[in-house]
Length: 310
Image (cartoon, rainbow, N blue to C red):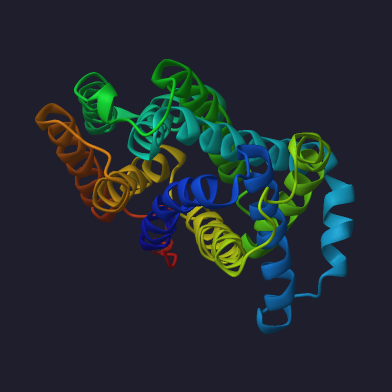
């Protein structure tokens, strides 16, 4: 669960970096998303010799063995990130992030119950309900005039589309928990790059004012920190954490994004919106307590309980 929290913190910086890129370079959401995916794939490929396990070539065989699974996962990651970056452009970092990650746990909880058979339970329902209440406060308690985007309603719609892709990625990652985390992330970034290449070329792949040092550094940061590092940790966490718990812990991301957008970009949050952020944080803490209080695998008759690193 710590891995997922660290990943969510890194993700929370991605929207702010994208907003800075929009203002400085003129790149659009499709181009920023493509460069992020390509950078994440390259960063993981370069770091691969330092990671335990087989070389890069067995990943090709893994993809051939389950092309639908990895294709859908990579496409879901591409939809999630591109819709999110487009929502940042239309509604601002704070609104886009909290709508995407606030609605995500609801979709994941329903999907995990119907598809994976995960039990929600009374406390789980309370956590999801708290997340929904925090989302309502953040959306309806915000200040549209303080939004950095031009169309908050369109931005909220794009955020909900992003949440659908996010929920699908979590559920697929949880269902295929036997894979190594870095390999799953690398395949996902490679597939996402292929999916985004043609749309990004049509929209404009290079900055309007030319490639600058600052734009290059911002794009490199997107590829390494909130992409390669964060997704590697996230998929590792999904191997031992339930899908619903992972989605709620990932709510750290909108809290980080909201704080950075207010402090660095001048976006505003009203008292109800700040209260919503506090409710989301409470949901994260309750989820963490729930996870720590439960064994990772009940003991079979005559065998000790199995514990796994988190």
